[in-house]
Image 1: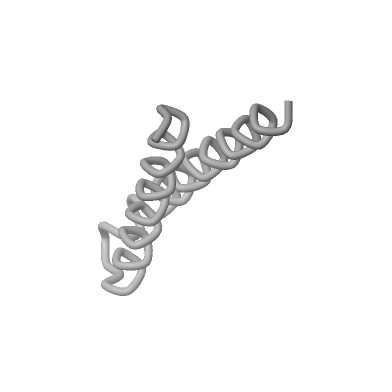
Image 2: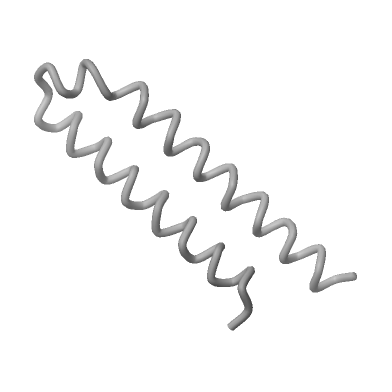
Length: 64
């Protein structure tokens, strides 16, 4: 397994963890959700973007 594959898998796992954390926060509600919901969303979007870019790099390197 190459380093790029490991990075992609870790980014995907981090996306899933952040998504679950945000959904759990929304499910419980309260002050924690009101304070951190936007931060969790932007974190998930950032990690997801990174994972997508790494997938594009992997495809590019495979084709080239």
